Image (cartoon, rainbow, N blue to C red; front, side, top):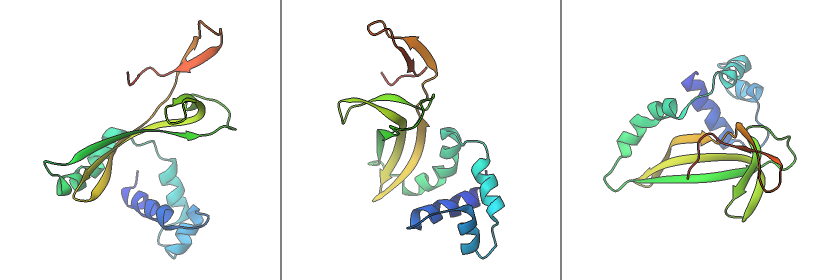
Amino acid sequence: MNKEILDLYSDYLLSSFGQTTATGLSRLMEGDISHDQVSRMLASPKISSKEWWRMVKPQVRKIEQAVGIIIIDDSIVEKAYTDENEIICWHYDHSMGRTVKGINFITTLYYAQEAALPVAFEIVSKTKHYTDKKTGKEKRRSKITKY
């Protein structure tokens, strides 16, 4: 993955108020980066939390303090009308007190010196199928659980 294009594209997404496209970024950069370069970067293999940590570790070390805080957040983005699969499936939402269909992800931030840096992430994938004994319905679960 091209880290310079990833950084530039991330800034582009965060600062844009309208529709964002690879072509739009290329136009903004006056052709210095082609839309094909952006598309290839987006299509490159997924980055793992381990690889992400290697990228952000130098920045974390710059702000690191003895009183730094690690914040772990378990979130769900609802996708009620999307077909179910291993990632978009049913998850229990503690804030709503019910199950919702969506994407469940866990993020970890390091907070110190009034700065917060994302240091890890994980998308919860429910790959194991099983039959619920009470209802007889087929359900999904993750191989790894937080309990």
